Amino acid sequence: MIRVAFCLALFALLAFDPTAHADIVYSLQNYPSFQNGYFIAGTVTTNGKIGPIISSDITRWSVDVTAPSGAVTHTDSGMPIASVFLLGTLNATANEITIGTRSNGTNQLEFVGPPKILNYVRAISGNTYQGNADVPAWNTHPSNTDLGGDPWIIARATVIPEPSSLAMTSAIVAGALALLRSDRERRLRPSVIG
Image: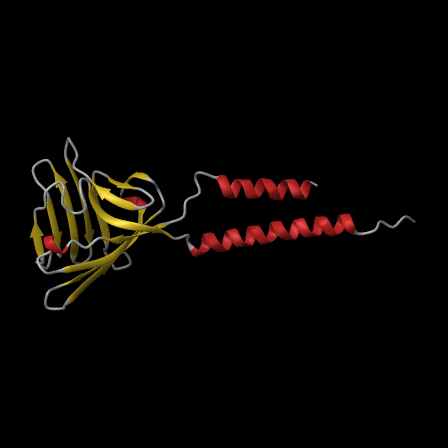
């Protein structure tokens, strides 16, 4: 009976722990009318935090910018000196990452390679949306309601559990089932009185 209680408690902990988050992979949004013939594609992966996020909540990213000529510039978080520059905060939901204008300053998100590949700026003094800041691509100034609305929608998400989380959960479930089975077999085994 103790094994059954242990298995149920472990299952409840795994199923209902509010601090357990799987990474969320977001696909960058492409806004052709503000990209002067360029095309962007890529992903941003967060640690699963919902609400205001900071640069350390972004665990991986990858950006491709395709020029009208067909030339592709690629940068990702695994490259040397790659980083995310975030001034202020972004907001993450289970469905999207957004960036709004602050009343007391600037919200800025920049993916830095080499090169500085993609830059979003929401400021009281004006908005900027740039691609390939180090290799001139586009530099436009969308309004507050462009790029998906106000706030701007940077990326849309799909929730994908990390493989390690899936493996750990599978191992725990398999262990719990094994404990339940051995407990059941022990109860069904005839006792020997000698």
